[in-house]
Image (cartoon, rainbow, N blue to C red; front, top):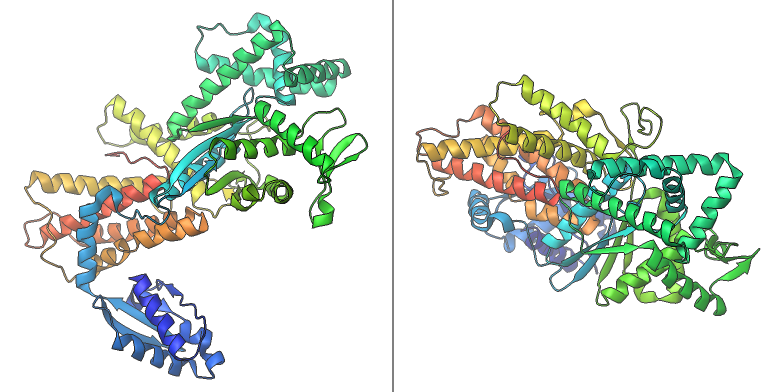
Length: 575
């Protein structure tokens, strides 16, 4: 529908003398103003030397001469806006389409035949999975699902630091605390906790003791060179596997499954080869024993790629990582990387380097950044000890609050149901809080607001969905089947209809902008309209209109579930 109207506006403007007009359609904030609106007359009035009102009349006349049957009314509002209202028949047919397509409603073939790799999360083994990794995972997974829903073949990738100083610090601590080393038979949570403590000990000792610093630097070199000796290698492999197994537990809870795992160790070797090759070709140059890329010559920062100790930096590892991606999937149409915004400048340099090394990679790689999670006071969130927030602890705290709410309610849940609901709601609340902001912006997190069953929160959307399921179950018990034949002339029903047909457009916009935020805002508005309907209209009753109201409720549940799935938020069947 949007495309039909945009084409008509385009043709009208072109007939009036605009060579390459752009028709911009939006949904009016006030539904009483119609289903679509355009400011095309305001945009081009000066160029055509016409009054906006007169130009709006001319555009309206052209559209009326070719008026689509789905358009009920075209109205002009001062100073020159054109508003379009759709027919009840069209809105009713949308309900039928939703019920027919169900899980595929909103999907498209926009990217059919395309292959896209999305790299996100990037936790480092031997360190804890913190709130920043949760943010990257949430945004990356949602973007992956939106791209997939648009027809592309999506490859999910995770890039992890299996070498580097953080590894050497943890391994040094493991060497010096072997008496407390967990047994292979111990629970993974014990192993993970031990590794976290080992890294903290190694990091603190590195700062405080010059002799320890030398020992850790030596371990770092040996691990890079794959020449660390049996004892260090055994501890290294043990710690690495513990970390990776622990991360998999977290991914399962978050609903992510990766196709590829790339590691810094392998990427470093490839990156070193690239730097050596292009040092000779003048892309890089030597400076005080290091190898650098002079970013200032391109309006960017100068970056070190090989340190004076002969070790690769993150930049060099990224060169190798991106080369490896295109080696393993040579027919990629796009490579998307999701990281914290602190790495934005760094990626500008990286992509500039690739312009000299491999234009295919530079042209197909896109970096998407995310901000920080802030507390209710607007300051960076930290644990009681002032350290980073561990993602698991964060979700565990949310789950405890959900359990508390369930125990205070009079709802009858089994223990298994409580566990499932607590996990779904806690993870959903965290993801919603991350995705409701535009990527790149900081997020203010308030636990009481995040877990609210009213207003803009994940639980509010999940509860709205379960309310619809409850109504459908009630209708089933009363033998009321959904039917779209008897169209209802009711303002609350009509308002929900006006929102439901928009979903495919919302998904298309989220794809275009790589921004799940638009889906979040849409689902909030849709849920509010449905809950208003619920408050004013009895949906399950013995009236002739009941089958249509049930059909509308089912359509709402389909769209809500599809939208939440694109956000990576699971939908419990009751709450």
